[in-house]
Image 1 (cartoon, one colour):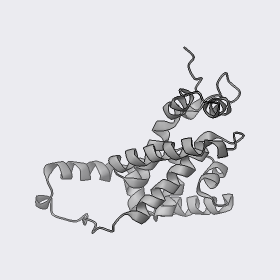
Image 2 (tube, rainbow, N blue to C red):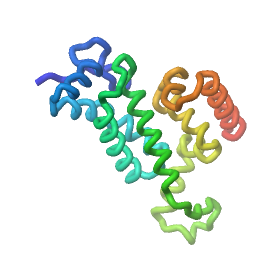
Image 3 (cartoon, helix red, strand yellow):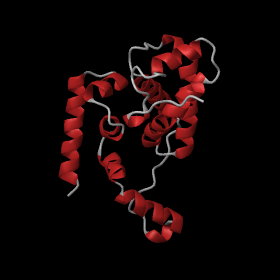
Length: 189
């Protein structure tokens, strides 16, 4: 049984025995197990990105499944010279944006409600969320800045890779990262 060689970030090693390009060719050639290997390698990263964007596990699970379905349906359009993860994250991002557009607006629960109005589980969850730096960043930053910051540092993408995923210039990404970091430095002691 052949196993995929792994490098940092769970990506197959370039030029290894089974690189992304080879696996994509196998899928397009009709190998039913090849796409399962792609899902196995990249599922956790795509899910993690979508969970950060949606803040709901179920939504992230559904959007992850939609992402891989769209990827499978459009795999012949992939430029195999570019990293597969960037393409998958771009599909995931578009799915999440479509999800947000389709979602019905709801009234957010204010953070300053007395503890007596929250259940014990909600209180514990609120304490955990307050301790989480990413949650603080999400609360302080506009959605676009948070998304860029997450891709840059949460997904450990370079400025160039982040720009490719979100469809912006590298300069624009640098500006958004700078503004996000500046806002966080001012707000978080």
